[in-house]
Each structure stands twice: as structure tokens, then as C-alpha cells.
Length: 111
Length: 114
Image 1 (spheres, rainbow over the protein chains, first blue to last red):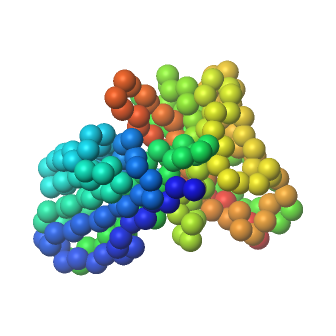
Image 2: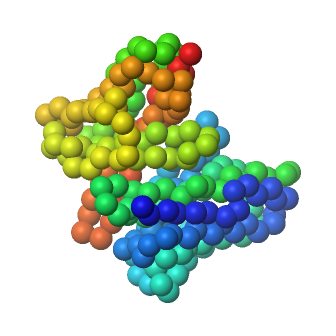
């Protein structure tokens, strides 16, 4: 079945440093979504990318969808303590699955 | 609009028991999905309901079942609980537009099986 992997699994950065998480799917995706889950919270929708090579920005966050529509990345510039949490990518699964979530990247910020 | 409401927030059960979790989606959302989240397995899709019909089902044993009512509220049931069923169970309602599909998650039910 479809697999969606994210690297790294964990990332510790100093406040103010940049952060990037990468998402790779075993199959081509029609679209990809990104979610953020704060510690003790639930996943919250951030963005959806649909087009090959698409780049979208939300303030300090930059999202990219690969040309082959099998990978994606999320880059945060100048991290802040409010960026702490786990970032998940998710894409429509094959077979009878709805959305297949990536393994997640847990970001911690060192003040 | 109120968000997705899940009850109860926490639950402790023992092996062999059964449990029912409830989810009320955002008003107007007719699709409800359920996910299991564990530290080791991440977010795993359980099933999706739309207009009282199960549309998709993940790779979980038959002990996991669900249903949706005419008011879009959904319940999931786990019978004969096992220790490995301890997890955060998340419900999400879906907002679909012509070009977009967003999941709105509830706060989840933290189930502990002893």
C-alpha cells in the first residue's frame, strides 16, 4: 500500500534558526496537505498543494510540491517558540484509504 | 461555528471490554472520518462516513466499527479491547469545495486499556 515518509523524525533548533521537513510518497499524489499538531493538541490543517512544482507561502512558512508530485517540503524561516509541534504531510491514499498521513516531524525549539 | 466535538475526552477500560466514542462534526459537514493515533504508528485511518454510509475503511480488524446518524453525528465502537488499542482516537469532519478538501479534527478521545 501507499507509504508516506517524512524526514527528519525529530528536529531541535535554536530559536531564530530555519527548519525544513521533507515528505516522500511511494505513489504519485493528486494533492498534498500539511497539518500541524501542537503538543497535547490535535492536527490543524495548514495548506493544500495541488499543482506540480507549486510553491505557497504563509508568512514564515513555505510549502513546495515536487515536480513529480511524489514529494513535498515545508520550510520555516526564523523559527519561533510558537512553531513547536509535529508537522504532518498527508496525501490521498490508494485502495480504500482516505488520507494517508506521513510519519511526522516533531519540532522543538531551544530558546 | 462550533468545532468538532468528541466525547469523552479520556477513557480507561480493561481488556475484553467494549467502548463507544462519539463525534459531532461541524454544522453542515456531512463527512466524518476517524483516525487512530499512537506514538509508534502515527495517524492511521479507520473509516469514513458520509450521509450515514461508510465510504472508506482502513486496515483494522472487525472489532472496530462505526456508524453515522441522520444528523451527521458519528460513533465508533471497539469491542473486545486489547492493550494495543490504547491510543488517541481522532474524529475529523470534512469541508469539500471544488478545489479543496480540508479535515477539521476534534480534540480526540484518549483511550487507555489496562
